[in-house]
Length: 238
Image 1 (cartoon, helix red, strand yellow):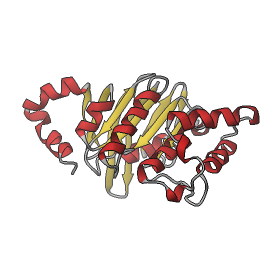
Image 2: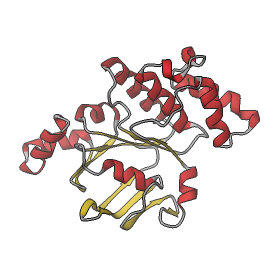
Image 3: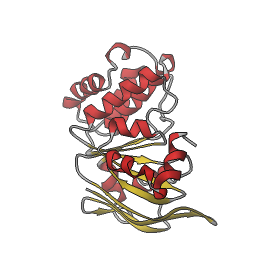
């Protein structure tokens, strides 16, 4: 469904991505795993149209990110690491506002907001301002925002960053539920996080792909010198 083809991105002399290539299958939950600075966020920003690649491309279905970015954006719901939400708005009003931006029809809007409130477990805070909410609830509002308009693909950048253990478990459950119907890519630098949620992981470090497989198969490889260093870096979240 999504093909990353020899994708490179330079910031001056800094090579953030170096000929990155991998695929994401339809209906898959894929974890983009790597330490901070590995190139995960840059990859997302190119996929979602916030950055242009220096070379290479991304294809989503039959669309090319270099030529058809507006068509690709229609298929993607994106939650950056810091959710860009208006904290002075009520949760319901905010989701209603996003529904208008996403051009959700008036006949469907109310039922769609109710559906997202149920999926993201927001029913008991819909009347509160976002500023009143815990970080865990704010992340759920951000996920509901990303899901607005029923996109085929959900892109989540560090969705559990800064959450307490209970909030992490709840967010994982929401992601798994959404993954039954959508293609999901989410990034993390925590190995256990990917293990609990993903069908497959792509491991990045210093802008390059170091591994692409299931967690089970990669764990078997930790005794090999090829993967030992990168797993050590990821596990400590450096």
